[in-house]
Length: 419
Image (cartoon, rainbow, N blue to C red; front, side, top):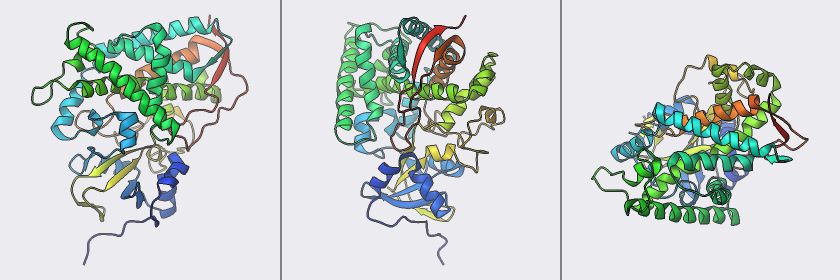
């Protein structure tokens, strides 16, 4: 007698178009229909398993069962991740490369980031006070670009920031698109990779000397497990894996703007300057609003879990948004309620806006601390440091477009420092 169960299965030749049409809700919709946290489907012409929830995350981040190499579709590698980056590595190679990223997350490194973030927000407010109208998303991308380059030791001129921010933004804005927008993102990555690669060659040639503890310096001189320097293209991809995610924080910043406006009672709680409540507010923004829809991996070798067979090489998707809104994990998950994090047990598998599991041995995003630090400083400015008007506009956001951005990109006017 077989000891395996029949996994719920979505019938049909391929459901890639359904995923594009339903976006963030694709996996959750089917889990609801099947009354199951897991189901089988077909995506990109191949068998795929989709799952959500805490147990699914624990399974998905078991490095003995899943691998990341060749899991991401080529179009995503060509825009979002680049080739041969840390996201596509497994085993000791992944651990060794991840250590390079984690070395940046020291208290001193994060304090420097905090200081740079405050400095750039001060400059932005100076400019905004002289401006009639501010589009928060566009401004935030440029601010984040300045922060990223300054922290990473990447030299960029003031008149080059707008274009660089646009190119870095195109990488994550185009990953889930088709047609001209996707090709724009691919072209942007090629241009930025070449530019960063030239900087790396200048450092190796002694023509450029970034600070010794900077990203540019560390990544340029990083050696793999065999003691070899990373090739120029791979080193450039990893530097961009610092720059691009920091610019992508602009998406969360837009949702901070929406939350501060839509939930004035929560804004009132921020005025006291309670750092713990500010942290809870930031975490709730990261949980509540859409950011990453899902992550992908391939089954490393055949195994059985909860009676379901996972065959070697099967594409597997973990629902990030659905897990962060899972009623089995979160009470009233569709309510914006920062106080829920006062009692959160801290599981690395239940709250996964930027991936789950262990930072070093697993694939949880190394930049999560960077994201939280920048968001806390940003929240203080938008809630406490400045006053502004929010004119009538469309602050709704799509659950289909990935990433999702409020339609108006959050327009504010009459910005003044709070006395």
